[in-house]
Length: 413
Image 1 (cartoon, rainbow, N blue to C red):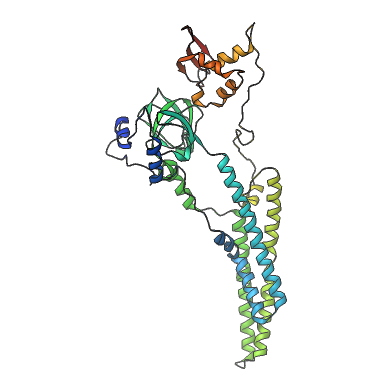
Image 2: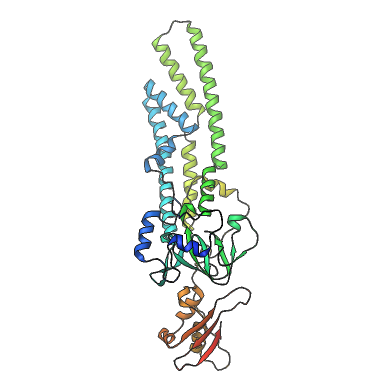
């Protein structure tokens, strides 16, 4: 499992955690140590059970209605009715191919979307802070958490004043929780205030979020559409079987032991007619085509359908709640036109705002402001002595700056 054993009779201290994890808060893990642990514990991601292409295709031949259609095709084959056999088999195969193709295309689109939305993290590697893919985090990594960050893995807070974390998705708590050094932050929670340095203690399926996800995945989920189709299929199966039993029993009773091959063959043909008449052979194909057309229309609007059955579920939605940033908007910030007060130069204003920022944080607002500088190299002439990050209470960042002449001044943004 991708974690280290930190359990014990008492909650371990920061020093104990760092010792057990072999982590150095000043330099972090070396690239070699990080790669070794990554190979040992695996990526920081939830394991996904991928169905093989063959099993995904064969799944369309299972179910009440497909079974009835297959029974009808088998009867047509037995009696030698090749016309009915060809039509029934073609409809069955068409439905399976259409459903499989749509599912395959949706799966590819989802994989591409997951890749583009991969979570990032700031990790201390070899003494340098780097922005890395969250999937590469391992137990013992030193990470930095900022306002707005999604906590990428379970971790122990080790440096900083405090942070306020929204962990309602995990614990159901309605208000953010304030945490200090020595306390734990869980993967999937969101930093609402402050910033701190932490050491990763668990990744992937061993995190609190990962264990919860496993329980949810084990519960299973059958859509309303699937339940409705199952009910229709079960009813038709029972009806067809009852009629077949009555028909066969009555014919055999009339024959009174004098079984004739021609009569039995005729009886099989009648059973085939009854099966074909009682089962909506074209229903799976019609349903698949209808939902596939809906999926195509949604795809033109940049909406990815992972399961065709979800279209029917979406049709019954009254209220749809969606995250705005990165979903309804592009999650890209650019600096608009600056309007300096008094006689201040525009570039001077942007320079002061840049000095009240910290490039290492990779904050989108700070990066957008710094991108507005005509000559970014001018920042090298200044040294940031102290930096106070943004929080929703003060609604500003502050920095103490020393210029090339040794003059010290403060800027706020």
